[in-house]
Image (cartoon, rainbow, N blue to C red):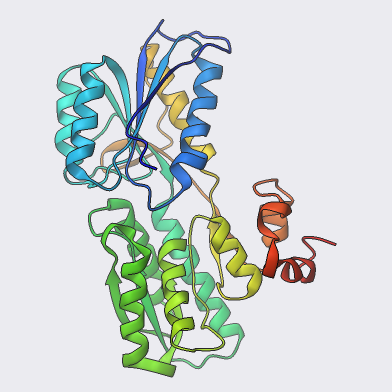
Length: 342
């Protein structure tokens, strides 16, 4: 279901920010379920704590650049003082930043950076670090399992219009370039769409066959698409495939042995940080920059790589997911084998 727009007045907590200020939280797409399940709830919860009288407007652009521009203009017209923006298109978002700043409205770039026009702040996980971590994890696994030097891997990147995808790609490149393995082929996935990744991977399986010893996929959706392509081609076992986001589907694939790794990055952490920055702006303060990226004061969080070896400790022991959410049906035995359930 497309969440075109949701506005709510936050009426609990101890408010200390600008009275009755409006803050907008604009997310890019619904290809990933994280925005409705984690990012917005995390932002909403922190805003309730920090600013009881603030109004939060939430909208999702459903991967439509023009729709996001309309939503941005709409929240400006509704008097938003701070806009948290996860852009559909990082280049196109530069004009939105310039427009908002010309009206004295602060823009917090969220998850995806906006390289061409410095936002007032940027909050995200370290995307280049994520790319390097998932690729290095795969390289280490290939070495440990005796895969010979010179063997080939596929590289599936994210959307070409997403600057964060470019950072993830840069991290992947850094790890693979320093490894003894070669990249057989590489693909930028339009809109991060899993069917696009699956279709491309299917073609590479036909082209390279058993030469493919692993796949570095930039997120769980594209990784899942690659896994589906291998299964459809009758490849068993599936070569190790990376991911990122720790979606329920990916965690289940790791438990079943079909996906090698993912990244645990509870979006609520970044969402809460964005809320704190927003409230600081409402109070007229300058939020502290932990680092700088694209000339923008930033805070970048470092996430954890998850494999079957540490999935219990990183996901279940930390309460990020509960066994009853993941260990259903065909995954029940795998959960027992990994000690997640008894």
